[in-house]
Amino acid sequence: MDKIKIIKKMLVEHRIIYLKNNKIVLYGISKTNAKQLIINKYHNSKTPINLTRLVISFHKGVKFYQGGPIQLNFKQYTMFENKLSLRYEYGTSGSIWITKRFLIKDLFKNKKKILNLIITLCKRVNINKNIKIPGVNLITNFI
Image (cartoon, rainbow, N blue to C red; front, side, top):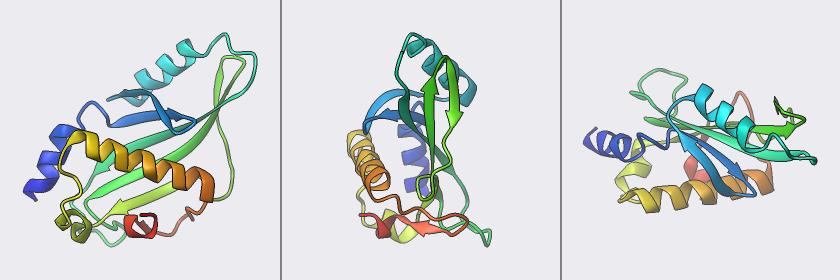
């Protein structure tokens, strides 16, 4: 449980991450503030911009639908004409759970390593499009 607290402290300001072309464009704590910043950043865009929103949440991992103590929730958005709209594409939105067994492997040593791992996951999700809802996926299926 101590590892989860350490990871939580490292990722406090990176709870909400927006990615464009698998590169971090914006990160923050609040969904509403992050959404408003994205709208302000791309309000002059003439072409649609595809974004991936990643929400990192922490759980006890004891309820039957929870696959582990850390959840990475992916959603795909399109920014066009000052509107941020959710894209409904099969296999690009959903959750990946990080299990206790994966945390024991000690791949989450520092913030840089965690963010690199998250970007690797985003690349695989965006290319392979293999997140299935409402099923629970484990991080070991992607790395």
